[in-house]
Length: 394
Image 1 (cartoon, one colour):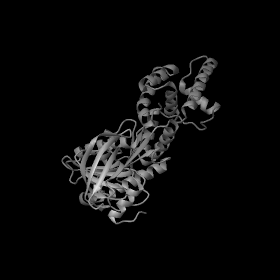
Image 2 (cartoon, rainbow, N blue to C red):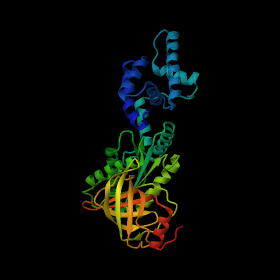
Image 3 (spheres, one colour):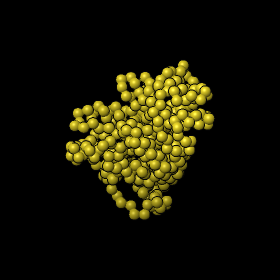
Image 4 (cartoon, rainbow, N blue to C red):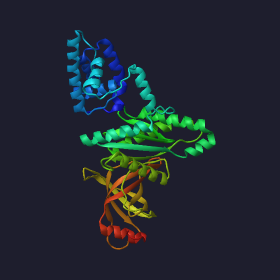
């Protein structure tokens, strides 16, 4: 597996400098040490080393060809001058005079260069990556996931009522809140995730090899940790979030961000303080309060699990149902739903559907509001619901 850039370079930078100080000419030793530290294949490590030492980014196969050529070139130069020349001398000559990828090189200490790059990629207030770096990595990760057939998710979160916080407590308090969110994201994300300050009070996280339902696990960690550390603030600190996944929701980085934004806007519109998975809607459904008996049971691999449990609906639309129950559902999970509400008196019996869990919110101790979207619903049942709710089928 190819290592994401965010996970590999902080470890590798110091390791490469140490190994080069020990033996600048022993390329095999350098590759072996980095491969052992990262538990990665040689080809991946060669790509990584070229990126750290030259700031040139190659595909794995191309990096392997360049590394082999550099190794041969080092041996040839050493034989010509009658002494071992270092890796960096051979690499520089190769990219200037043979491969010609570098035209105007500048010698600079690696540590100084890396600190300069880090500053260019980092938001000064939160310590997270900035928008420019996020966009760069998102495009790269989408290409990588497309190449290897892996999922990728993006979480966008926006602090709720941030302007009111600034107005009531002053901009220093607002800055402190932003820095606090940055620290929480740094503590709760994985090494392979890329968290950034997206702009203003908005943050974003790239989650490699993560489907949308699993991305909600990160959201749960962030919310729990933020609730802990923000307990002593003068005003409550919450956020609304949106999650979209590649390739399920979008086939490119721009569309992926747009889908996550759409989910975020829905979360804001539905009362804030929640995170939604993106889902496509053909129409904007009107929600109507409805008295209904809801029976549900979970589906696993398309098959029902356990017995139906009884609940009650809070509202209903042509797109889904909001009901209350005594268990926290997993977001993105599927249910078999049986719906029987008082206004449905056409003799057709209860309505049966397969639904997906889109929203879960604890409203009281041990009581949860669960919002589900219809995925499989017979056309005649759509018409029955529309008739009972006195709304047209668009």
